[in-house]
Image 1 (cartoon, rainbow, N blue to C red):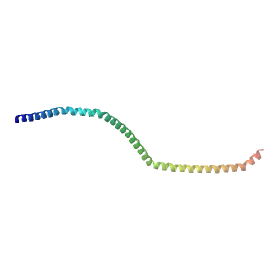
Image 2 (cartoon, rainbow, N blue to C red; image 1 turned 180 degrees about the vertical axis):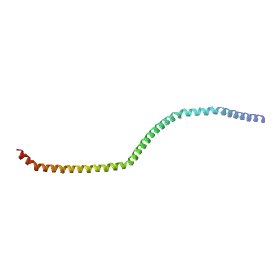
Image 3 (spheres, one colour; image 1 turned 120 degrees about the horizontal axis):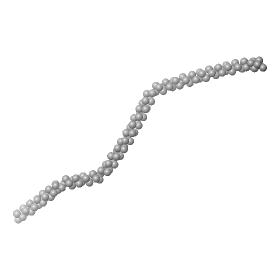
Image 4 (cartoon, one colour; image 1 turned 30 degrees about the horizontal axis):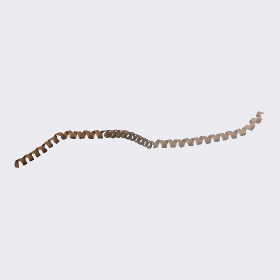
Length: 128
């Protein structure tokens, strides 16, 4: 019985050892198969995500450029307030000068009209 028990134990150990060797020998190929299966399933989704991210990046870059351009335009406008103040003062001066010219022309016209009224009847009566 000792011999039979020993043979049974040895057979169990060798069977377990053989099974372990078989698993160890095939484990890399099983692992590679699982990796391939995973890649095949997830790769199209990853490619779609990458494409989406590239599109969003392009849109973001465009928006950033637009915002930076608008900021520089606003800064240049705030820096040009001196020019606008000069333009404003020049416009006020032009308006005042126009008013002065208009009032002086109005005075001249009134003077000429009143002078013509005084001279007018005399010229007409002596001319007839």
